[in-house]
Length: 432
Ligand code: ATP
Ligand code: MG
Image 1 (cartoon, helix red, strand yellow):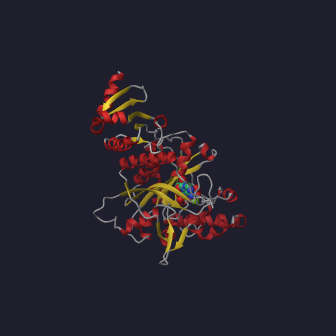
Image 2: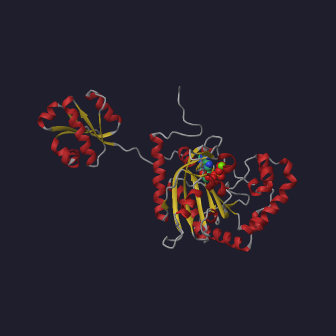
């Protein structure tokens, strides 16, 4: 019997994990500057949290939910995205209350689950880094969120990205557009894919998001939402564009863009890459927008919101394709070479003491001969070795060697325990 990881999941091995944590720490630095604070919500929620918000015709709800009934017969789902859970927590913990500063700005990072057909950049367990900002309607906040997305991507060394921008307007704009879209699509009904046929009357905007090539050909000619905006919606969008111009953030308007989730209105955006990681095909790395109304949908007071979610796996695919290595391999400070049985306990104590003094330290656990231990020290890129055998023990001394210069020095054991930095400085001075 050979065990394999579930389809659509990945093992993140140490070398990759370093890159992951470098991405996460860069993100944290950027969030700090923009004043977004972390929230951690459960990885599973009531099924309703997502079915009520993502939209009953969305891919997520119709095909991709990892849902099950637990032993208490509760309908549970592994979260397919971050926003609904954050909104649920925002409402449940009354973060809209008067004592909480507005806008309330938060970020999250962690795994999401969707039952998808796995392929490069598309997994069943994947990871998102996302932000949400609640309690302000200002288009300046939309632009802050967009600029934050760009800053995050820039901070990991990505610059040649495309920002696609659109608006879905307010409810009234959408109602008007919805009808125009139905009128346009009805004559093409027979040619549409099965999914799109179903969505035509239930949620025609979804048809614009179809991944079917023939559907895409048809909707290329569809009317534009931009012609159906109310004056309020136009004003909001105009300001967003002006503010982006003011920040010199380039964008392209894509009036056919809708998002995979139904809760968006007003500004929506995607950050795309045509990296060779995706065979040069424009692929969305980060996507988001405004979702006024979502907080009410989950039982909270009327509260506007805006946010984005960024796919970490896709980001890492680009970094890999561009040969961007964010974290340097850290050298080992000291390898302790122990010779003979008596030195075993001393080595144990020395590595412990060195670590407590703030150095990285390693020793042998495989009963290797001194030669083998030096080999291991080399392999680990040790800057120093510290050798202790019976003779050294008798004299309460150790042999300290700088592996880069091969300079050596006999050092008192007590000094290693009290102040390794001082002990090694003697060797460093000898070099100069
Ligand atoms: P797509 O159209 O590619 O299916 P989506 O609209 O479902 O994307 P969102 O829900 O907006 O995607 O998620 C935001 C980002 O999360 C995506 O741009 C992508 O980078 C990432 N993402 C979404 N689904 C997956 C997945 N199954 N595997 C890996 N990353 C994903
Ligand atoms: Mg999807």
